[in-house]
Amino acid sequence: MKKSTVKIAMYLNYFVFAILLNSVGIVILKAQKNYGVDELQASVLEAYKDLPIAIVSFLIASFLPRLGYKKAMLIGLALVSVACISMYFGNSFDMAKVLFATVGVSFALIKVSVYSLIGTITENQQEHNSLMSSIEGVFMIGIALAYFLFPAFNSDANPDAWLNVYWLLAGISLLSFGFLFFTKFENQTEIPGVDLADDFKEMFKLFAKLLTIVFVISAFLFVMIEQGIMSWLPTFNSKVLHLPENISIMMASILAISLAVGRLLAGVITKRVNWIWVLSFCIVAAMLIVIFVLPKTVGLEVKEINSLGDIPIIGFAFPLVGLFIAPIYPLLNSVVLSALPKKLHSSMTGLIVVFSALGGTLGSRVIGYLFKNEGPENAFYYTLIPMSLLLVSFFILKKLTAKQ
Image (tube, rainbow, N blue to C red):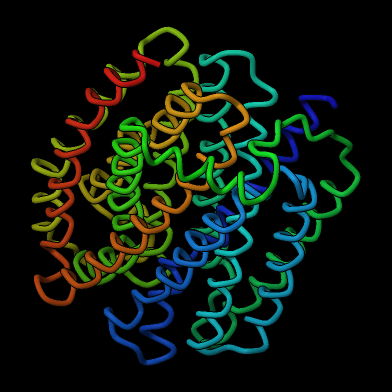
């Protein structure tokens, strides 16, 4: 098994799903305009994406080492290719629900496989931190591309023109399927138990660890913040900054680009700086942006906007919060996985994905509720609550992992 080839396969799979998963914010905006639903109704798309991720991850995490990670990823890519084509022909809010449910199921297979494989091709915690951050960085590059890809297919003359993007996404998924199909690698992961029932017992035993409890709460809080901001930033740009639809979507790409840069930089920085200081600095910086930068963005008086160049500089500032929250998720995952035996990585990844999905669902739902009831100009201030709790959790995790 060539490690470089396996890494390329993981990068490519993550890139494909980055575009699909995080198009939910764009489709939320489209659903309000094209399918006549309000903010709260549109926010349910996040649940259709995240709940299948949580359920499937919980059910199959301990089983995947037996199935084989390659087979699991191939199944995920095949399912999502069919779903993209179905969205083009279905063209309805109900079909959007089906699309994101299928993407959620498929991503559960992909993410558990990728996270588990990282442990088999890295030798120590520093390598694990670096590869985890790099893969998540590539994921964010895919997200950034989505914010330009979807507007490229928009047309004022044809409100359904944007659906053509799903032919391209189906093609990319099939390309990834072909590359993975011809990639040869062995499953080097230990089977956690003697049979499937024993595998489930091993996963449940993880809940007995205080380390696991604190970690899953931390992962839940982070994804609640990230997905809440990411899913609703296009709507924030449209309703608060009064930007045209295409520019609202493209502006949201700044957040994704910031997240990508932050995660790639974290892969380098954590080779020299202890993770606890990196994460502490990042969360404090993110809180300062919400406290001091967001009010200036909300109070911005925007005149006629025809291009990104017409937007005042301060309008670009809030999405830079992504630069600082970016390293949190991959580093938390890497720290915890590195503290556990490799045979438990698949089971632990299942728990990571479950609570990440639940955090994403709740985050988008809460922000959607706040957009409707507190006003879009106030909704993002509430992210300071989970940010404060995260800061406390970092130091608890540091103490617990030191004992492992």
